[in-house]
Image (cartoon, rainbow, N blue to C red):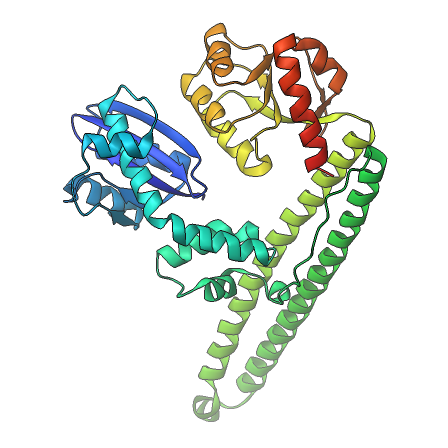
Length: 395
């Protein structure tokens, strides 16, 4: 599950604020007369807490109980945060005092760990291992690893342990046809990596079968001996050792198979993106239905920020709207309720309700011209600028 930092203001009215480890605000809200168990359930929807934070010097007992339920650490400032300090920390107008206290606690905690997080980000980016940022932060904050190198050793496949030499990338401007060729080259590189992992998995399977045969042969040979001799010579320790090794290899094989499945799906996704772009169309992220759980799940797979998304089936939900706006899409396509549409537009999100994208397996697709025709003159200028940046960014 995604690691998160949670700020809690506990009381008759309980405030809750949740960040991911990139300081994206996933949730902010408050409820009256809510039990600790329900608070725990609501937090679980957004991920696995790495830190439960309070704005008080002395940690309230309910907050300690919430942290214990997740087996995570608590964070408290060295003094009770004042109203002026909270205003300086969050810098956004929030009327609900409980939500404000929770957001101040989460933000203060995040800022405390920000230098450490930034150092991890820089190191992993330089090594081309940015996909492991959250997990490395989790291991180091939980003191399961002493440093970044040890954390990488714990989570990274052996084939990828060799450091890659830094590459200097020069920004160039390519047309869509050249970009498609570049994507094809990258895809071939990924396929070569896939073949290496496939070979590695096959070697593990062969080793596993060989050990199984050795074990069976050993047991059969020992059983042929008479009972008295068998009692003296059966090497239970060796059998147990082999059993342990077999389980370890089975676990490693399961991990490799899972990694292979995820990797194969990524290849298919990249191929679909390439096909869409070769047709001079724009990929559109599909959100099957309008709920916060579905939106968060889609974001984990495809990263919604600054992209075009399509709400395929709409059901009114303010919570889903808050989550969607916090993820900062550029354009939302779909027939939305007026209240939800107004909420999105106020957050500078362009809403289009008269286009039905062409659905593919992983994405949908639209032409830039169809979108441009649906955007008013004020919005068109901003969108065209974004479209040009998107094309440059994906080259």
